Every structure is written in C-alpha cells, then in structure tokens.
Length: 261
Image 1 (cartoon, one colour):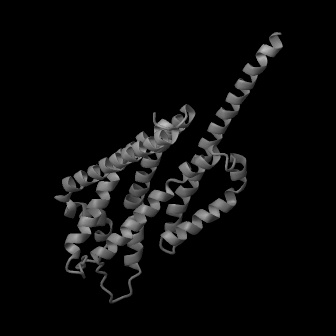
Image 2 (tube, rainbow, N blue to C red):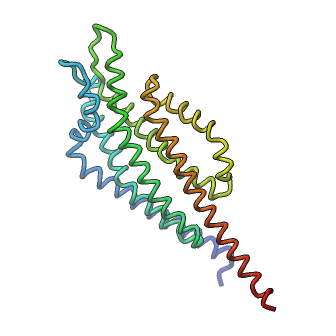
Image 3 (cartoon, helix red, strand yellow):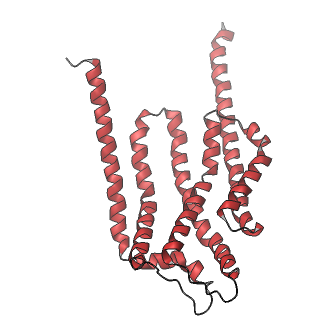
C-alpha cells in the first residue's frame, strides 16, 4: 500500500499537472487571439493613437525613428490587446484551479470579485483612452515652443500609452482592494472612513505623477479614484453588516435550545 507521504506527493503532482494544463490553455487562448487580430494590427494602432493624431498641428504626423518600428509597434500593441481580450478566459482557468480549495462562503465572494476585477480593469483602460488621452495630448501639443514641430515617435507613444493603460487599469481596482482589506479583517470601514482625508491627498498625489502637471487633468484621474474608494467602502460595509447579522442569527440559534429547557 502507498504511504501517506506518497499519496500527498501524488496529489501535489496532480495539482502541478493541472496548473500546467491551465497555463497552457491560457497561452493558447492569447496566441489564437493574437493571430486573429494580427491582420488588423495597423488599424488597432491607429485607433489607439487617434487622440494624439487628431490634435497634431496641420502638416505634422507621427514618425518612426527606428526602421523596425512600423512593424514591431503594432505587433506589440496587438499582443497586448490579445492578452486583454483573453483575460476573462485566463481568470476562468485560474478560478477553476483554486475553486476546489475554497469554502462555500469564499466562493460566493470570489466570483463577483473576479468579474468586477476584469470589468474595472477594462473600465480604467476605456477611461484613459476616451477621456484622459484627449486632454493629455492636447496639453502636450499646446505646450510645444514656437517653431517646434510636434512629430511623436510611434514607439515612444506606444510605451507611454501602455504605461497609462496599465496605470489606469490598476487604479480602477481600488474598490476591489478596499473590499478585500475589509473582508479579510485587515481593517474596518469606520477606520478607513476616518482616514478619508489622507486617502484623498494620496489619490491626488498619485494622479500628479500619472498625468501632466495641471490641476484639471490631475482631477480627471483623482476624482474617479476617490469615487472608486467610496464604492469599495460601501461594498465592505455591506458585507461586514451581512456577516454581523449572520453571527447574531447563529448565536441566537445556539442559545435557543437552552431557553427551551
């Protein structure tokens, strides 16, 4: 008969094999989406760069300093887009791997968290593309000294755009982070509410580093971050209240037989 250590080792190996299979499935999903989108790589790049192109002075255009940029810049962006589109499937594979080890109440919280995390990340990217970019690029172009022709490099623009997309996607995860801190017992809603002034200052400080140095553009990021913090605080209060009600009901059920005697 196999010893307990052998059975434990086999279980660990089974988990590693399952993890490998799910990672491979995720990679295949990204690769398939990439090849499906590759034919439209130039169109995707033009779509992302349109807020900059639309504010360039007449007679100016984007340039490619590196001879390989016209190919690799759209290539890199298309891979990034493919990964974003595959994110729900990748997270599903992650969920399928960890779900068997979760309790029922943890699953009830984890599923909405997974869904909201993806949606909020997408919302952050959409906010950067449709709201922030117009103000940011308009500000940069307008600040160009007289006699300077603004001709952005396509690789430099892509690096900037991807950094902003990632920053805003992560920033829009604030409600999830706040909720997890409350749910895990690391803090409580009242304590966070008392620290609200410091959190507002921190949000504006973060926005100062992520946006041009004008108050209006900083506010475009900082105000949504403050609102998202309040959203996470509300969700944390709701869940904490539900847990307290459940504890009271459980205590009442435990005391009921004693009172009947």
